[in-house]
Image (cartoon, rainbow, N blue to C red; front, side):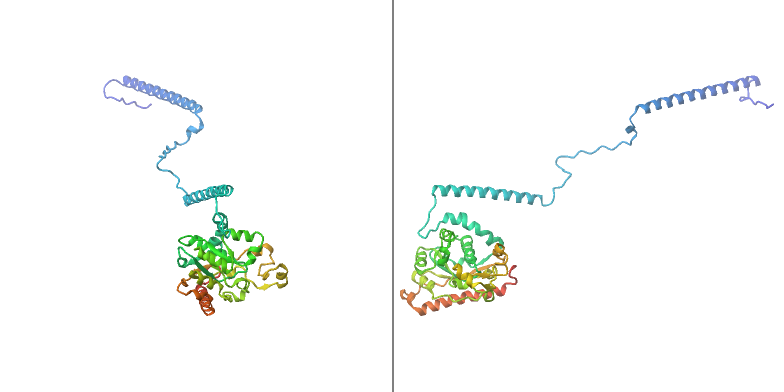
Length: 371
């Protein structure tokens, strides 16, 4: 049997043994109490876990910072301001167009417009005719103008230009150039062939746009009235010439335009147009059909008449219109308008000026369509 050693050196062995048994009993009781407490805590935790939603076991998320109104989190898309501006401009143009149309109708119904002795209707020309031509001038042919200041701000003047293109589109573009780009925005009164006024509808529009017959009496009247008149001395020979002879001036007639300028003392303004020769390249002419229809020619181009109406669309060549220095006529005496030598000399001088300017402009041009 093992010998029990007392914990303390005092007292008997029996008392030491009793104290050891009491200590072990207290230790057992303490362990039992601890076990019961652990069991109670486990039961309480299980009950609590059964009463909670599964999402409560997720890790807590950090709070989302609030955005202040002065610091937006999304930057505006690049170009959004430009697109908005374009939309606003388009809306403004639509409103202006509606307003102008309403004003035009009101004035026409009220008779609030004037027509001169030639049939020129400025209200019609500015509100209807010129707006139809401007898209061709600005967007299709992209016309560049030089020397427009050589046309005087007031008083009569005679513009003399080369003529080409199968259809006289060059005359129309020149009228837009003078009306829109001259500092005084002067109307250009063209002297046209009889045929233009004999065609149904065309003659009425030509009169309302301010144009008249290419004859000396009408030319002199316009110049004395202080108008800017325009003449194309090549006539049908110019617009109907084949593409192989482009930019080679035809004969300028007998100098009737020079006579009108001398009688009225109006300056002559040479005008050179580059780009009109390429809009309808004429490669042929159906003469029997032209005679049957009473036309000076019936053109054949790479696209007409093969493509029908589509062939009437002009090619978008790049245009240049240059107005030369005035040739003054007020220094000549009264008999000069009847002198054949004076008429020939001035006519040839104007023709050569236009021809040399055409050559100079063509030498600078690198591409028919891009300029």
